[in-house]
Length: 355
Image (cartoon, rainbow, N blue to C red; front, top):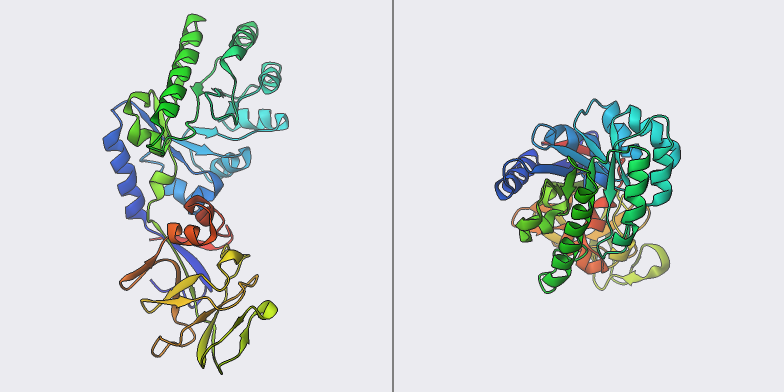
């Protein structure tokens, strides 16, 4: 599909790949277990609203980071239940309630604010089972239960997050977390609380700990797989002699006469500055090295080995071209990070095109 007449850079998202991934997770979980699509952070770089519209009929819940993301989905007509996984300011409680957006509660202070609110949003209580980010400790439960009963609060969910589920070397850590969660569930039930959704597993946990699927699993990175391709194009080509400095700070000099392509993306677009003089892009199915510094809005690639390279040629930043491919993991290894960061940092203003 050709978008080069109107766009300098764009993201193509493969609908079939996404729906296939959902189907694979449906095979893993038992009937009756809810599947939450975690689409926080602009759907991991894939486009919040478009991803939600593509998957709405295939999933049971949406998980977002903020009330802002939740409200955006409601404004665009999405009807599925939504849970805000991150922190919500007390000033947004009424807005969440009116828009039927469920909130994570992980502090007594926020629980008290909700208890005293005129219009209460639905809440999921998060338990700290050992990761030590958000969450109540087991020793907090007497206060939590007392407050819940005093103000007649009805939690919609109880959940935790496994800190090392994808690390097969330390299953004891995840198993310990699951046991602590079970104890919190028992305390709730002994207090007469019931009919709440229990959820523990994200993508890795869903694959490795079927005994902890409970009532819902939260699938994030597992939904996205290789569905995203990031493309740009060659804006300009120039021939430079050997010994020419390229880009800011004179950090790289050509060792031979070179043919250079100027590509209109940079660190503003999400192409990390750490890829200066070491990143690669694909042109006509071949790898081309980034020369010199990554600028805010431009990179320069050596296309000396590409026959007939010219302005307007497609450039693949992440994805496949011919027999070659560059994936988010490849990029992440070069700059010492993880694939999550690579894809979520792609500028949300770049057009996402679902094909």
